[in-house]
Structures are given as structure tokens and as C-alpha cells.
Image (cartoon, rainbow, N blue to C red; front, side, top):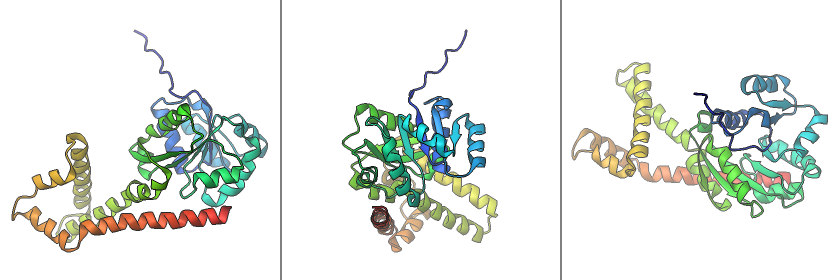
Length: 288
């Protein structure tokens, strides 16, 4: 029996304005999950023909850094994903402004760039989606915060969600919560990596080989995350199940408590959120 071809969820033309690692992660996710056909994706960058050739070969997408083609490509796109560096955003958005029509959806993955700033640089109340993906999006296990301007309609919301659900989970939030989300999921993988560094180092100091210690650490973190995900139990409940009174795990937890581990992690999340706020304000001041 012949298999029916997969019908893509998205039939719109999507242009990635920037061709870095996050743009590639999203493109890879959408194509791998048949969210969109590769011919409906175009990536733009300013200079690197080699990078565009690599992406065209790898994913079957279109790509261009030709200034003459760029205006036409952007004008004809249904969705424009802003994926350039923050320092390049002002010039790019001001150049984009005269090319836009009212229905085009702007999606930003640029850290610190608010909806208000994007609309101010465009000089129009274009429908804008602000997102904060994390690096785990590159393996399809991302966590992306999404905020919508009031101009984004239901179809635009669904379209944006389809894009980012192809690389992980999404969480729709009010834009003013974007910084605390950054502190949890945006930068969160780094906290876990840091703890993994310490666990691996402890194993090595205790006599395990670096390879053994690293493998055991990775599997422990992976297993713990899967337990929370698959059992639906709270982390606190699962922790109590493996912490026998006066046992070895209890001794470890007490040591963490002496270092105020719980409150230190909360403070770290809040520090990240505050710094994200400061960086966003600096970006806005510089661009406007």
C-alpha cells in the first residue's frame, strides 16, 4: 500500500533574517517534523556565501546574501524571523520597514529586543511575536517562551506556536515575564551543566575515571529529568522517595542545605532575570 505524503502544517513562506545556530536549529526542527516544506524556507545573511551553501545543501532550503534579491524575498515573505545579532537589528529593521505589508508576521529570537522596540524601529504596529528559545532547541528539546503583540491574530499565534513546537515545548507568557523565563529556561541549561561539572569532578577525585564519572553524571541527570516528566510527580516527592532517614542521600542533601543550595539557585535565577532586564534596556537605548 502506498504511503500518503505528509501534508505540512505550514504552507507560508518563512524567511530567516540571519543564518546562525538558532535559525538553523529551528529550520532543522521544522523540516525534520514535516512542519514545512524546505522550499518555503529562505535564509538571509550579510556576507557568508559558504554558510548559506552549507545550509542549502544540508536542508534543501533557499538562501541569499545578494542585496538586490533580499528586498524582494523579504517583501514576499509571510513570516520574517529576526535572527540577527542585536547590534545589527536597528539597521536591519529600519531597512525592512518600507518593504512590509500589514499582514506580514514578525517573529524575533533576539534576546533583549522588546516588542515596543521592534515596532518603533519599524515605524509601524506590525504584528510581532517575541520569543526566548534555549540552546536545547538544537536537539529538539528546547523550551521557548512566547509573547504576542496585540496585533497578532489567532492564525498568527498558531503559526508561531507551530514553528517553536517543532524544536521543543512552548510557554505563552506576558512579555513582562520574559526576563524571569530567561532566568529559568533561557539560561537554565547552564546551571545544570555547572552542577554536572561538579558531580563529574567529585567522581574523578574519588577515583573514577573521567569517562566513568562523566557517563554516570549524564545518565543520572537524564534519568532524573525523565522521572519527573514520565511519572508526573513533583521533584520534591521524588527526592523524598530516594532520601532514607539518616542514609547516604540524606547526608548529601544536608550538605547542600548547609550551603543554602535551594535559595542560592533561586538567587541565581533572579540575578539572571535582572541582568537580562539591564541588557534589554541597554539594547533599547542603543538602538532607538
